[in-house]
Image 1 (cartoon, rainbow, N blue to C red):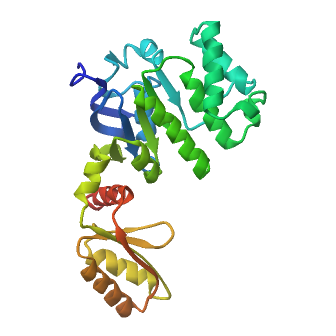
Image 2 (cartoon, rainbow, N blue to C red; image 1 turned 180 degrees about the vertical axis):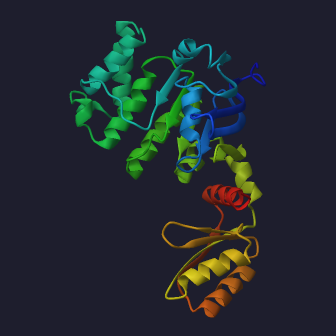
Image 3 (spheres, rainbow, N blue to C red; image 1 turned 30 degrees about the vertical axis):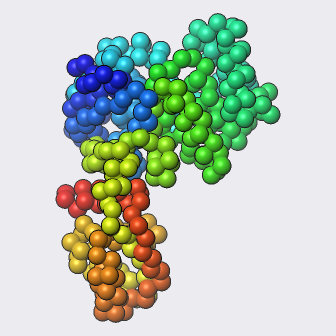
Length: 320
């Protein structure tokens, strides 16, 4: 399969994968990524994101389907593909040397000439704010500094596609935004990025298109703006209750909305997605009165990209 249209750097068609021959981590995934695009993969733990990244970066072979990166088949051209991509995985991976040494090692491994290697190393150390720790061992850095090194050193060789698998885990707000801004700068120069995250705010800030993946399937895929446009006029009601009737309140709420308009959260609260907020509020108050539950928190807000994600997943779960 050739790229579906000019400028397409990743083509995935009918991708399935199983580790045990019985259960599928990916169940018929298809999508394209264009040159210079930031493509986001959003999903819960176990949704299939990491398996998809491993296949795209040639770490594992898919069970079924066709996957091409830069026009090359991941099953046959792994070595050629790896020369032209960068990968930042969730887990730490460092050489037993200093920050500066990590850049030098990467440059040598990728065959970058010494003069160019030094130039790139100095440029990246400055760009990613690592001057003060350049002589420190990489293992002795803070979590945020380690992430900066992991991303920056991938730029030591010329990459066409950068895969970022949860790159901001463990970073504070300022470091997260700095890292995303660094990526944005390189995207302007033509870099293509595949970005997995749990943070919907990050996806909103960085991505051109996003795909919501759950249980090995893509539930929804579009530009960030188009996804938001679909939800114009809708509101999200956040509600939390306490007291003896709390569980009865949530159960009654779910049954009243058919299980598709409400989503329980880990903190015991619930989200109600609706285009008729007045009626929904009346329903909430009525159920609270009937069950004896006490409303602890109630808030009405416009939908966000996070709500698109949550509603897509809840519809999928409700349809099983």
